[in-house]
Length: 171
Image (cartoon, rainbow, N blue to C red):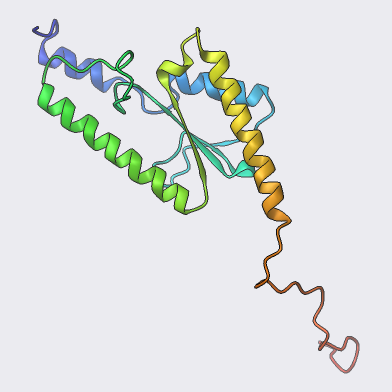
C-alpha cells in the first residue's frame, strides 16, 4: 500500500513528533505528582536520559512510545508501510539501545520501570498507574531493609579512640 503523503509531507510530520513531554509521559508525571512522588526529568548523566527519575526510590521510569521503541505486543505496534527497511532498522537499533541502557542502569543499582504508551490507554490506565505505585512502594521497603543490613566485612565505628581531645591541639 502506498503512503498517502509525499515523502516531504511524511518527513515534516514525523519530525514534529516530540521526544520529551509527550502525552503519555505527562499522564504518568501528573499522576506521580498527585500521589506525592517527587522526581527529576531527563537526567543527562544517567544512561538513556530516563523520562522520570525518582532518587528516593532509586528508580527510573521510561515512558516508551509503542512505534518508536518497537513494542513486542502486536495489538498496539503497527509496522510502517513505507520506507520499510529504514524504519525496521531504526526501530531495531532503538530496541538494542534501550536494552543496553536498562542493563547499565541495573548495574548502577537503579530499578527500571518501562511504561508503554498502550498501557496508558483509558481502559487500562488505572491498573498501570497502580502497578507503578506498587512497584515503588515495594522498592522503598526493599531500600529500607537494605539500609539496616549489617555485613560481616563492614566495621562500624562511632568514634576513633586514638584521638585525644583538648590536649595540646589548638589550631
